[in-house]
Image (tube, rainbow, N blue to C red; front, side):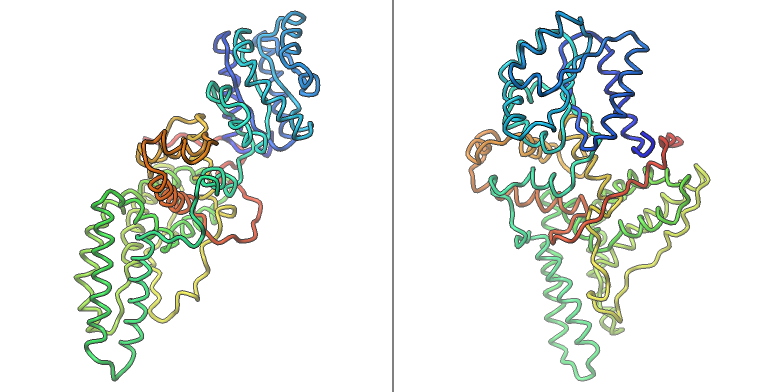
Length: 452
């Protein structure tokens, strides 16, 4: 798999380890949309398992379609397999493939009685239908091994489908509204200060409006949502674009540093969330002085300064540790004193974003159970809710009952989490034409361990 990212190689190793660890019942789901990569994975599995004397048997989906249980038990008697793989589901018509998934659900106990690892070879499309068609089998899965990441839009659609009352693109949270009000007031204040004949009460009214909305943001932070506020400001400051420019300027061999930057990007995000009270206080304190100098206040730039200082510390640490210079992280705030916001390009979609792609992979790896590390921007309660949204395909009333909330409250929480996930994935609500994503962290080899 010459073109597969390093994490794909890791997943092959993890899958093989799970298979050979001990002979017992395991339901392993392998997801790949690319036939060529599937072929390479199969060749690797065959080779590695042969070296440890493990007999692997492939059962074609077309053969299992008529009588799945008979197909499995017949192979057990004939071959005495130590690993069984259901292969070729994507070649069946959707109704027949769905029927096979239902058979897996119905015969789950009989399949478990075989006491061997069973690998189900799927595509992302089949995986999306799996929980609804085979809910009991799904609940007993040992792990999911993805070799084709699910497109970010599909992940968001799966989490926040209309059937669960997901937010429309027109929905704006109280946090977004407060930030919009602040930025609108900042722009109006700039225009007012540029007018020689402005009246004192005009800036005073705008500054009062800014203060009121900063108080609203502080209340959100005190109410347990500082990361939500930081995510909004992080996106507006286009900090991911700054970091991606750094990655893009590195040589191919140096791009392994990307994984360090991604991890530390999240640390910097949490750091700025913790610093928000200080950022807000300094911002408000500086407004009168800036007005006297006829310079408008700029909350996003103040946030950017704190974040970029932290990222610069990280860059210095990386340079000292692994000898890769990242001096591109200069302290250059996005000051728009003489430009309108429309002059700046909108942040790119997650499909084009290296950091967004990594965030999407990290989130879904955790949601599927492949990785037990919850993304740090989500609380334990939020994580439990997201896992329910990901795996539960039932009606809204059932979901509300599971989480112990009323249906209106569940809808409200879904809207809040949808906005947070969009921001975490650097994914704009407005759809744009997409380009194939490129994982720049791979560089054809596994990343080195970070120096301690």
